[in-house]
Amino acid sequence: MDKGARILIIEDEPQIRRLLKVSLTAHAYEVDECQTGQEGINRVAVFKPDLILLDLGLPDMDGKAVVGVIREWSKVPIIILTARDQENEKIAALDAGADDYITKPFSMGELLARLRVALRHTVTLENSPVITCGDLRIDLVARHVTRSEKEIKLTPTEYEILKILAQNIGRVLTHKQLLKAVWGTAYNEDTHYIRVYIGQLRRKVEENPAQPKYIITESGVGYRLMTGN
Image (cartoon, rainbow, N blue to C red; front, side, top):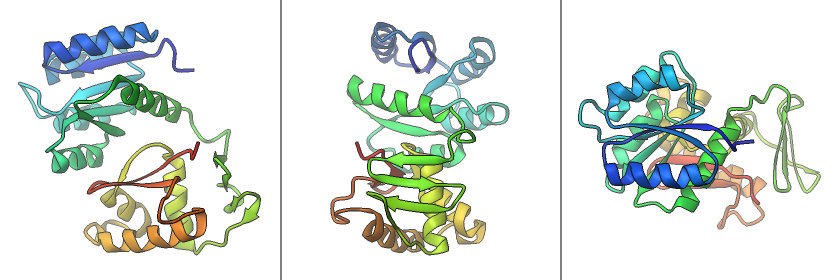
């Protein structure tokens, strides 16, 4: 479903732009590119991309500011291109509304996989309220969770966390995003709440909680729910 999707690259390094354009075009994506934040914002309105690859270190404005401007009027998926030592920056970009990040240097295989996940996530869950991750099944209407067809009993808070992860399957959610969604803005800094409940969830939904295949930790950033395949 993602073949032919329109990808906008906002990146000031010519070598990276060239690599991305050649590789993505070879995989049947339609690609446009620009090297400044303001140019990128303008191109979003004209090119109407299905997904944006955005570098945080742009010459004219901060990449997080670009995310903020775009999010004022568009829900297009945004994947951040970030250096390995920019943990706080990537968290801030995700909290500003970016969908995912990939760390430089990256492999094209990993980038293509992240693209496919982000593009699939643009399909709404309204017509598919049942989310399946391997042998884990989450029915958002019935609020019913099973693994290998056996019911899993969750507390209301455990279910809310799993539901939010499921509604954003494949997408990394920061500690702040999870805290705000479940407990509200007053608990923005209480990351130990999330760690405790994630631990409880893993004991219930994972076959081996010590080596989870569904609820994956993004070190220092947050968590994401994977398909388990």
